Length: 273
Image (tube, rainbow, N blue to C red; front, top):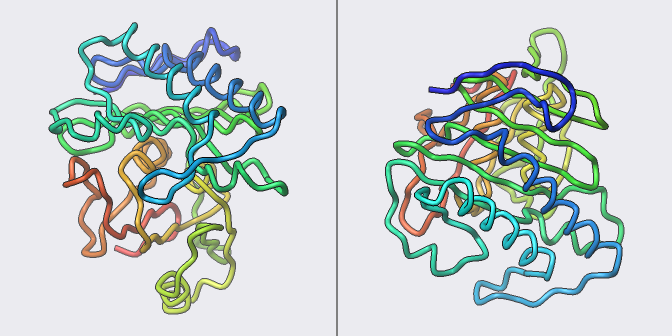
């Protein structure tokens, strides 16, 4: 169960969100620090190496990962952590409660020269296969969101604190969000079938933030993703009143083999199921 106590507008007095034994608010500063390290690498110029799965990795991924894992180990030494950039952690068996970390989601966007800041730092908390808490930070945009389904979701954007909720699209045309780097024919077919004519294309877990803050209404994803790509964003969306489903309309679940997601539909104001 999450409890929330609003208090102040600065980061050091941000609304406190307790999810099980983890206080997400205590992790906001390390997430911001990871974002600062990423921005510094970006300013200095960045290049990538490629992992065995052909996905890119940069020194920014590695520096952010080190900051986040050190903070989690210090604050919650008993909490298992599965991180994209810690290959050995992928071999761990799922526990009842654990964290999923993506220190730099949207590395391809990060590497672009014409970046719009669509890359994020993510910590998601999973309990009994459900996303119960998450932090998503877009450092280039100075946009920090945290929360979960039992607490609600909060944001600090350009220094301003607010609680966020999804919007109703009853009286407006629905807007989809979709991947800038991984658009596929199935997504286009889905949008056509549901009469959705407007789509915002953006990278990383920023798509979940757009839904959570009333800037989009649905996010269909048929291409491959990993659980660390979605956990934090799903929790933030759920805290704002949205939900994520599989293609059968069942709640999206975690702890799957290889930490790999199947297709999903993230719903805000536009309801499919």
